[in-house]
Length: 364
Image (cartoon, rainbow, N blue to C red; front, side, top):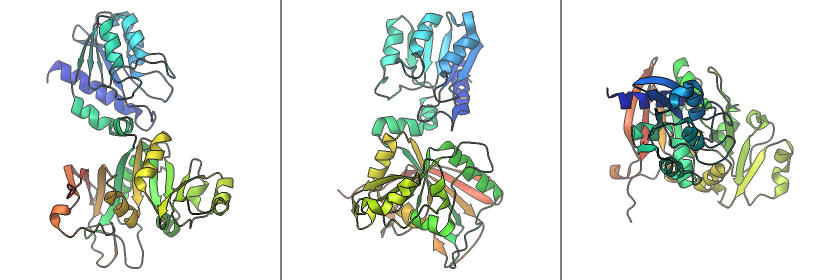
């Protein structure tokens, strides 16, 4: 493997150490190389803490002078919670910067690269850019579009059911698959479910089985059926989304219990998910996992807000049970929602299909 690629891949691996810890900031890893030898490395590990470049420079010390920095995202050039990384790199005497991606944040967006070049540092952009895009999918979409990255999680039988006809749903998948779901929860900013799921299961939507932070619950309840007695609404940071047609007095008990209530215009009791997600992004939520139920999954796909699907399939046949996705109104195969870049892995007896969502072209 070419040495340049190997060093950038090391930076990308280091960046993963910050997953679930630094949002809404990006995952960033940095490696400093001098005379073919790694002399410093680091990652952004904590929101508000030192950036990856700062950790790498501290480790390299005087050996940073005349060295090459490999970094998975453009160094920042603005004063935030920490000083600008560009100034630290210039002061340390870095000669060359290999940068995987330009940071689309409007406060940076090429400004860091221009500052480094103005100081005489050679900057090259694009090494391992595809991998860097995948790694920071949530951050990049948030900064580019004002929307969070949305993952749809489905756990179903081999014939596409999430529960029996009598409603029994625990547990369709095995322990390893459930542990994987909890790891995914720990890596997103919010978990979205519909009111029906809360009423049926009274879930907490917390992270268990693995170590990690709890995502914010984002509950879609257009008809305002939920009360503060639901366990998930007793969690700090819980958000309930409902129709603006309800008078404030109807949801005042929820607000008094500490629930953040968002209201939106609705058609009947159905709020527009794209509008909801735009507000979530404005609140600093860069990634959302939709966990249930079938109708919410269908609405999200119909609204074309889902970016990725994580589909867990158990070796069970349930027959006339509850389908994993509601009616999408698809009557022809060429109108199907498809998955691309699909990977498959075995988790015990279950299979996990992961893929990006490809929507059919509009007839217009």
